[in-house]
Amino acid sequence: MQKFGWTTAFTGAMALASLAGCGAERTNPAASKDAADIATIIGGVDAGVKGLGSGLGDAAAVQLKGLRTMDTASTHCTQHAEPTDGTGTADGNKLPQSDAEFALRGFYCRLVKDTGSPDSIPGSYTLVKNIACALKNAGGLTFDGTKRSVTMTIDTACFTAEQVADMGASSMVIDVTAASPAADNAHYSHGVKLEIPDFGTFQLMTKVTGSLLEFATIEDQGNDKTGTFFASFDESTGELRYEGRSDRFDCSGDGSCGWSRHDRFYAKVGLNADGSLNADGVRDVSGIHSEAYANPVGGWVATIKGDVTSGLKPLLWTKSTSGIDTATGWTSTAQAACSSTGGCSGNDGIAMPTSGSLPFTLVTGHSSSAAVFSGLTSGLTFTAASFADLPN
Image 1 (cartoon, one colour):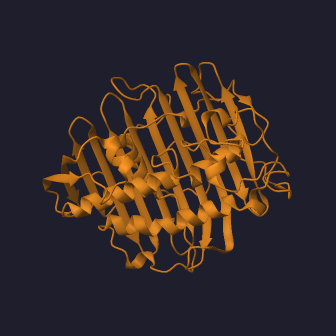
Image 2 (tube, rainbow, N blue to C red):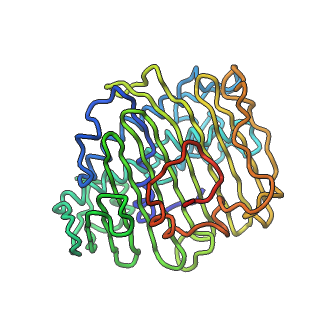
């Protein structure tokens, strides 16, 4: 699993935090939220994230054919949100990709493990909440299109002691430009551009329409080291969408390069006012995850489809040769037939294309981060995860 510097975690976190949905009984509806108040919008996501994790972590719902039961992330996920055998969380306890439960448990860990980085959804949410806190303490944001120099204090008032140590400084001076509407994509009512010396340029965008919350970010650290992340969730319907693209396969220079990661999710999550799952639960789940590596060459793709009642159908493919950007030559690895003894009747999962190119792996033939960031002029609209490239 790739490790990330704090700037990558910062950008990825702001997007990954938005992977959540909320049910019709939620309090504090989005209509009462202001898209300019980033911290408040992010704070409203917390209950949805916990509800989604609760649904997938319910022992009765996700017990796999009477084998191992995923009860808590503390015993079934490594610090980087990789699935384990349940006997420990060290790297030596990681499940091999040949394990029949690797795909489903991998999705579970990415959704419920708090890693403090974009390795997982909750970890990313924790970090962005702390960054929003620091920006607010630095004086907040004025959305008038004017560039301002802002000193962001890095201390335990907003960050954990570990995060402070990782950043290696007590403060950081950054150039901040806030505008309404967002400069690069007018679909979003508010946008913020951060220029961080020695790290690169980062942008984020928000929008609130009734009960629908939308969020997007992009990072550009130069030398083809980029990534863009979109998310939306509706606090009334529980409908969520997420697109996360870390595009570093061909990047150069210092830092983490030679890999790519792509996530796409759609789901509905029903929550009560207290944040617990309501009768609707977690349903209509569809997701795709891919990772590609340049040295040694290889990659893997996993998909998931279904719900926690009738079952989640996982599929997994691996490849250890060149041609990660093509749909042929992948090895299908047998996975547990279904997450429920119900057998996933009528659910064949999300299959990988059998021919042609595979831009989803972000190796070649895919849209650039910048093209996606500016090109999704209606935000995310898909109602199921697919391998199609965006924008389309």
